[in-house]
Image 1 (cartoon, rainbow, N blue to C red):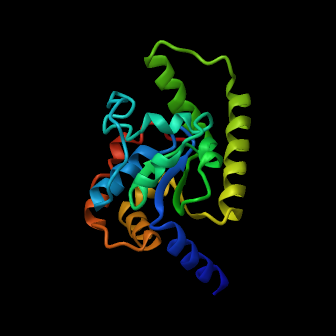
Image 2: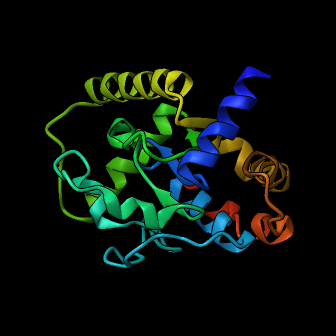
Length: 203
């Protein structure tokens, strides 16, 4: 009851929540953005990073998000209220507290995240100076810190999702998202854009 009253107060003071899709890189955040778009949620993106072999359906990114840690003026986020925007887990702590956020946080098997990232770097002719074991430790720490923040900061509400579950049971995932966001989204359309063939790095 107290939590519900607190959320009502925040909604009255700060307006509609910003829908945030978050998780580690290569964890399925673009898939969730595609689902939200299909369901009828307006997406905040700039189209700078275009679709490629690694993300053939697009990245759904806004370059300005990457500068959250350095930007002092974040008033532009007000325009994202009621819409969806992608924010990697590491940058969640930079979101200002004068908004409400409903966060879809997607988790994926760490070995799959690392394999997907490695293949992406190889396609670009790049390499990482950080080994898999160290990268896994960094990512695990990042996810833990994000989870801690999401559960304790009053401006966040969070729905945890699992990448494999979303791919295997997209309609069930779409229904959970619809209920969490408290909207009348097109659940059939949302589940219809999940492409099992794009699950290319299975543990």
